[in-house]
Every structure is written in C-alpha cells, then in structure tokens.
Image (tube, rainbow, N blue to C red; front, side):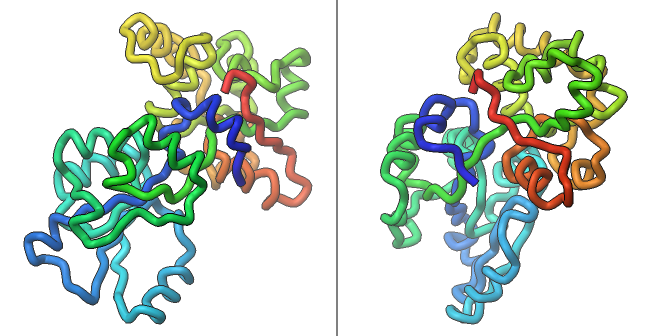
Length: 273
C-alpha cells in the first residue's frame, strides 16, 4: 500500500524507517566465511513471505538462512558490531548513512552486481538526493509511510472535536490524556516519533537543530505518560482492539483496517506529513 509520489516527495525526510533498503554486507564473503550455496539474510521480522524464500531456494539451489530483528536500533547495532555474519541485510535510509560512515558495508560492485534497473526512477532519484552514493551500496526494496490508526467512534466519544487529520491528536497532552483509557500506542522508534513531533511543531522533520530537537523531545515527554505501549509490533494490540489511537507504520495500520471484521479503525496520513 503506497501513498502517491507527490505525498512521498513532500514527506520524504519524515519516513526514514519505512524506506526499507536492500544492502549488501559482505564481510563474510570477503573473509571466506560465506559459502557460495548459502545466503545469510538479515531482515525485519515478517517482512517477507516464507514462500518467497522457499521459491528462491528451489529455483536457484541456494539456501537462505534468515536472521530477523524487530527494532531498528537493534538491527543497526547488530550490523555495526557483527555485520560479518550476514551477506545481505534490509535496513533503512538513515541507517544506511551511519553504516557507510562506519565502513560496515561494501559496494554492490564488490559482489559483481549492479542495482536493479526496474525501479521507479523518481523514487530512486529521491533516495540519491538524500544519500548521494545510495545506488552504489543499496537497492530500493520497500517504502511506505507512518501515520495514525484511529478508532473514530471511541475517540470522538471522548473528544468530540478531535482533529482526526492531524498529529495534534497524538501529541497534544490535553487531547491524548482523554484517550488514555481506551488505549494509545506508538511504534518504538526515535527516528519516526521525533520526526513526527517535529512535523507536528511545524519544523523540518529532518532538522538537527538543537532547539528543534529539544522542542520535539518536550512534546514526546508530554505525550509519554498517556501512552500504553511504545512497541514496534502493535499488530496484536490492534487486532485485539485494545487501542483507540496508535502512531504506526502503514503496514500495521492497513492490517487493522482490512483484516478485522467490521473494523473500527481508519488509517490516516496526518496533514502535516
């Protein structure tokens, strides 16, 4: 499920976690630890259908050993400390920059391959604008957006004039405090929530200015007492309908809308981006 390219362009700097990238981490191959008939794959949990891996193994004769992670910080730390355990990894655009700075990954050319050509050129160019050497080290795999999952009935019962199209619904303590009893959740990702707070405050989501970041963290501190869970896996909570408001990725958001029978939820892209 994708927003259109215009929306992506407008909010590109705001969705670093969801610009999931396919990167090569080839220390194992360089040290002789990797076998030609095996690929050690480091990936977000639940990011690929097991049948895809099974089909790949059947068609190529190459075995895939998949290792997974559920939190961005854990995935990044694992690659920085033990990247030589993997041949291929899925990470995010902001993480890619830090891995490059740490010399933790190798260029695609070192593996004798080039970036795939059948990618949307506009999105690929956007990636290169953010990270100029992007196409030398990575290939675009998935992209999406972060937004709000809302049980409109429950929210409007408590806050009749709630701004359902705005990050204000999530970050305004006077509003979110009234929703605590029906359950407020958030992804456990500083990259997402700090950027969202900056957007809410009318500041550039990618800002590194100390004053902007201080303001963002102050907004998060005001929100935190009313959040039931900071959890990067909100799927179960949404399926159990134990939350009436959640800041999460469109994957879990759309699942809450379409997988539940008579779902009470809608998924909203806030107007601020």
